[in-house]
Image 1 (tube, rainbow, N blue to C red):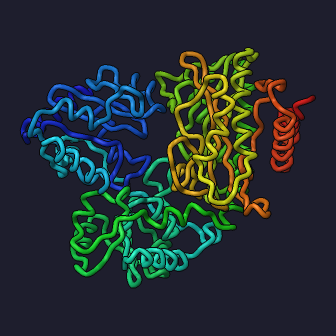
Image 2 (image 1 turned 135 degrees about the vertical axis):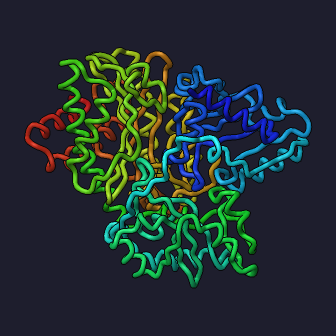
Length: 591
């Protein structure tokens, strides 16, 4: 079917004298996960990964994605007419390099400017100027071709209780206005859904795994506006908006509103998230800078931190029940990777304040575990047997916190190679978790701690080591990260990050271990103020996969102390049988 979609696009390109188009996998809000209404790239290519950009010319078509999706893309693109191009791989052409080599002089490159940020459109505009190409950033392909397009979500928004958010809307808006005034602006336009949700203490269910409502927002020292479909507003939400003097305008009125700003206004736009179409609608003064909300929401307050701790206790209980069930059910036969995911939802649903999963579970058995962002389907789902490794990457959205955990477990007798590789990953995971570092340290300065045990044996992994986590918001958020790429954002007390090194052997198995860590204040001495991490995640490592001989005394003590805390925090919530199971999993490594 995708080949028919590709040919329909090429016919439209011929009709409009377009030589090449670029199709992203995002939405006008530049969300990581998008609702079905904006999944035109998926419709066109058959690829369903969260990161990937398609390029189509008259005679060729390709999809660019990163290392997380190489194996998945090869499978999903088969027979589609699209070839896979690997991002950030030596010798592989970038989109711009590929277009420069394949387009002739005066070729027309087109895209839909609603789906590209101001920064991206500026980059492509400069690229076309440098190469003698024409450029059209207003090519609405999906509107023309996608006849059976799903409708835009109309789910109800809801209020995020202030006792859980830890800060009232007025306080957040006042802080935001101070930040934008420091940039010489009198207003800000916000298109990122999680920023709007955080600022106005609103949540929704328009996007899978992320509790946000599709909307735009505008804030100045005198005005607060929410652009949203009116059918989404319940009486409670309307009362909440009225309380904080937030005006409501229809979602589709946003470009008209922006076009009528006073020409002497100075509005802040984040060029990484505001679409080119929205930027072009504004005729007033503009300042391009990162949205202050990104940094504001990254540092969690006391109520949010307390909520994270409670949410991880409930999540740990659900995981105890999930893995205990798994160990009993697999030998009986008939359990698939999909069954693991559905059982996780069932167990989490028993817990207070649970809303949904924070991302679709990755349950990768044996060789599927080597596909970093593997997604089981009815056709691909493996049946588990009492042998081999199972990688489970899963998380929940609770109203008081978001969880994200990865555990690799053995379903039978572990081989020496599996235990060796697992212990290398564990050593890196532990090294990062026990890090002490001076204030001002960035994630890139810590990344090698998690990689070094693997590097010393000629092993590595292609993904980042740590990402920020939102509070009942996106499971992946900035501005901080822990990875090899240079990110100048310093880690601050109150930030939450993942700690997830791994190793992946194609055709054999994948191993990843992930906890969420909270940045907290540590020692202060003559050398300055130091920071450290607090483990938020509460679930044991698989003792059967740990080669104790490879661990130092410090690492053994670290694992034992973590397991002691896990048992202490989770046991009061468990039955006697579950307590006994957990006590066995948390036994000291020397026993």
